[in-house]
Amino acid sequence: MGSFSMWHWLIVLAIVLLLFGRGKIPELMGDVAKGIKNFKKGMSDEDTSDAPSKTVDHKADEVK
Image 1 (cartoon, helix red, strand yellow):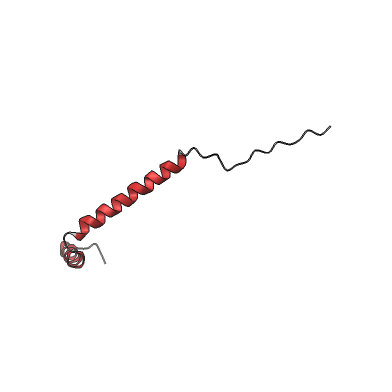
Image 2 (tube, rainbow, N blue to C red):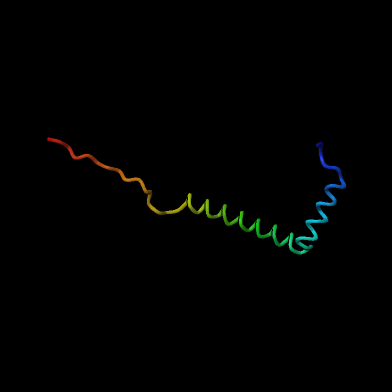
């Protein structure tokens, strides 16, 4: 069970092209790229948000 030969990869490529068509693969990859870009934007927005932190500083009253 070694590595696949060139014929195996050509057959897999032919099946993928039959299933998805020529135009569908670039659209699919574009959608994946947009999703990754939006994810990165969302992560950076979360880090630089101006919202106050969720931690609360408690100050103890002085005992006299």
